[in-house]
Image 1 (cartoon, rainbow, N blue to C red):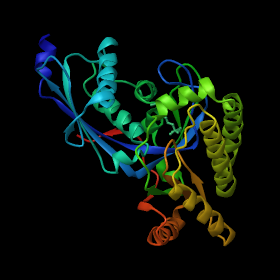
Image 2: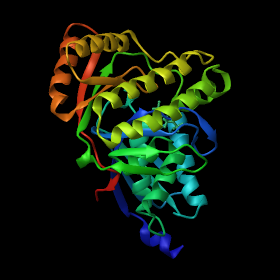
Image 3: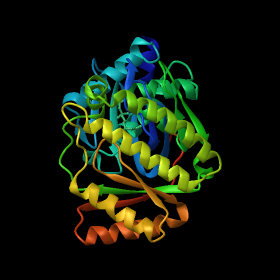
Length: 331
Ligand code: DP6
């Protein structure tokens, strides 16, 4: 108890970057977000979450998201996550948790990845013992599967299995590529990734084919990434995304995450590629499109998307991103 009292007021602030998967995690083997499919991702410097965790002398945790008290499912999820840390006796007492995204949260961009990675690292600053990166990645995964990969950042892999941690394949500084994110007009997401992937597992006739296809893509992508083969990586990344969306579309109820603007970007991209642009698309459980390209082409790709936005394609924001590092304590 004395220890707890002494810590009141202690604040740890951490930052983490969202990641976009080149090979997707969609499906769980069991509890704790145990992934059924292996995944590979790139952390992006344009999509950061900053989270402060302060020890408080209260009987419950306080959660603020972008300055507003959290409510409903988002609040419950954070409280359950912190409870788990207390159950594991990694931390004691209660906390005020304040989290800010520097990108549009409501847009449904991979925000749970950066959110749970930043929260994990900030909570770890209050833990009774130092936690190695593998343990941090496993803990972050329990908050959100994709968050495991934002702990390591750069180009990271998360295997399928009961309790995997992400592995760093290449730090941000070694990755020659980036992504341009097109935030498109889309209605609010009705079904979250969490619910959606469980529905896919239970109802999609393509689910087993998706899991096998993803494992094949993962092996092939690992090979293409070794030699930084952008064209091969881009093609495999698109195939993987389309296979995942085929599984989503054949889920009951159908998970139709795309909006007209999503398709406008995909069609324009094919045309740009025919004319020599080296960029490939991926889409998470949402309508937004991320284009993978060489870092030297980031401005060119962003320019194409901005022109498409001006032509009325329904693109709200264009965010060029370079690779980002792993989650870190900043104060
Ligand atoms: C389509 O990590 O958000 O973005 O583990 O239930 O929190 P939970 O799901 P989440 O799912 C991410 C799904 C995805 C693909 C990916 O990032 O690999």
